[in-house]
Length: 378
Image (cartoon, rainbow, N blue to C red; front, side):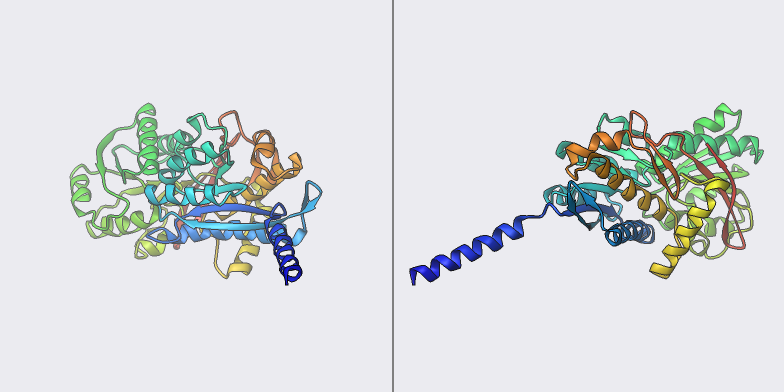
């Protein structure tokens, strides 16, 4: 009997050791809002990560002499800073090898300290507030241009190209919305433009009658909104009902395929001008178009906005692991900081802060409800 018990204990020990050998499983965390008003954008991001992970597993990647299996650990932050830090802590506790996310600046910034303290590399595919990479965290990277570039480009465009004479600014008081609106306003003034009104709302608001009525009395020819498409759409609809015919501008948060429907299909052609924090020139167009076609085939839906950047972020992180021949964060982090990776959105390389070098912006409008690219600027 003792012999049988001994055999049983030995067998259990062997199984336990086998289960503990998880070095061949590489956990990539992803955080985005897959619930709430901008869940469509969060799901778009998550799909981009899942597509990259699936393709990597199909290739059969070997790192450190072992064939690795990548596992996506997806969390929902609902675009809420408190839920964002809770999601980040879950990923830290799960000992993920790296993190792609978050989508919003408001969740990315507080979460970044947790990843930094744990030494886990983080690449945001879409957070544009400059503060994110200016905290001194060596673990923080992003693959899109920041609000300084985005807001300033739009502000200059409003004055020099759209010939705006009286410009109003609204933001949703989030880290992203406030940041991009402030940069826009600074650029308008620097270009000699006139800001006639400054109003505020929230990222959960649905009624903008009061602030729009106030602005209507100032006869703006351009209204800029710092925030996301879930708020911008209804705002555009209410502008129309109030008889406000101003151009409507915004950053990448409104520059989505869903904006036309969210506006109740009230947008006029060329009324909206926005900028996506990214984009490719003619030479890179085929690679991005091929990605979008493959994405639509896989998920039976079109890319909203950020999925290609998430896809590139995952592949950039894995390229750094391959360069270091290790999946351990401490080993591949230095390689990530100096990486040059050719992605579907262009060349990914980071400066000393973790910002993408030579980041692109795509200026866009809408015609017939569909987004139309105007220009790619750097």
